[in-house]
Image (cartoon, rainbow, N blue to C red; front, top):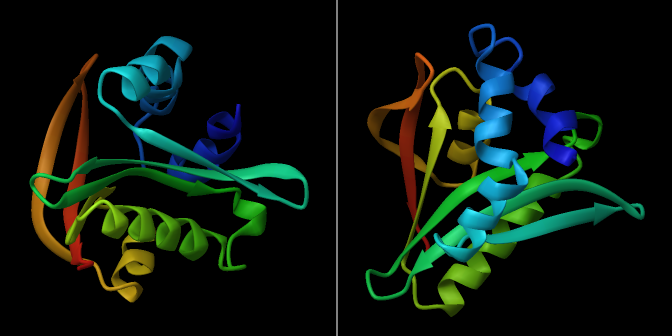
Length: 149
């Protein structure tokens, strides 16, 4: 699974011991992925680079509220810096605009260097959010958003 390859590089130094494995199972188990797609209507994009799955994104759209939500975007660390993350994000933005959305929102761990990636692409921190995910673990995020309309 692509997430098991990417997540340790992304979160290994950020999350407390045990949380990485807990979150991988919580978010990326087959049952969880099924619920995300079927019940929460998350749309997944898989990036194929040089004939190999190399990254992914997921998002959802609230056309009535004119908001999109980027839930996940990850690129294999060996391929970062090639513009692949920007390419995936621009694809999500394009699809959200086509659906009538004028705002895209995301959550990013407050210690994740990806914050600067989002800021370079026009996102701004709007709030902080702490989410109890069970098993004694907490997600500590910035809520970021960007006008896309």
